[in-house]
Length: 397
Ligand code: PMP
Image (cartoon, rainbow, N blue to C red; front, top):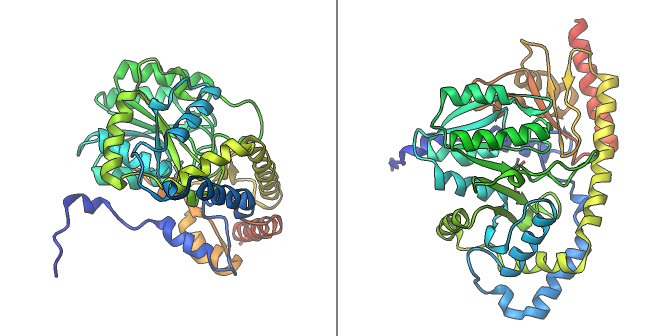
């Protein structure tokens, strides 16, 4: 049968990341490709205990439907945590989501009609493009440097696209570059949003995985007009299979998103919400996060030290203060997709994510995203050294 697909399906395509994640499952390949957290850091015993207790204490309530905005207790706990982190809010400002990814989908559905302009960092998180694409937006992009989005370039982009409705940013340890938006730029971004009347989607699942320096205030903390939507996630600080994240926004926006959430999946798992709620009550999640930071910092240092030692000088890399990624920039003309297919995979048995996929418009071939999160210390040294040897050999050939 010739299925007559909706027009929007022309924007829905298999992603390169999916294939790469499959490569990660081949044990003979050292993959720096996927963005998974390190599974050895999941608090297995404590999660087992809170799941048991949640069922034992609340019985069949934990297996029943609940309200679509999420368990009232968890909304309160998230609101209290956000308030401590600089975003003054109540439970009514919180919507519990099926991971931050659901927030990307729902916010696009709420705001974006076909042809509307979404502004993104260049490069940006691929999963956001995947979520936005079915709404058939047009993209406009903003240059980045080591302090995140360049605000002068944003002004130029806005001058060309004054009706842009939505700006998407990952301000802390961005996926894919690892770069963090500076304090000044956070303030300027909100001023520009007020002036040009667009909504800011602040997506920050890595925010708490910070290795050095003080946390910068969330963009949302500068929002006086209710135009910033903040997305957080338990995926990196507890475990991604819980599929729990949250949005913080004005009550009006939370209500609109709640209607879309009801249509999409009714609610998040009552059991998972009860278990996480109990986790937050019973254990010190900040202590757990401190342990995560230590491990990721060690792996980051190891990867960057090995890159410094093993890679040719003309390969630049970012030095993230948190998160799971570093971003490589090779000389113009170097194609990381070809290099991976022709050399890195067959000769070094190493995978990474070629950078081209993270650019919404003009794809740049000479970048790669490396994640240090899932590999052991030994594999990091072995894989990066092998890549470096190949790159060096190629230069001197
Ligand atoms: N945003 C960014 C920037 C991400 O890197 C990810 C996950 N890799 C997500 C959102 C989605 O996270 P989740 O749905 O697991 O909360």
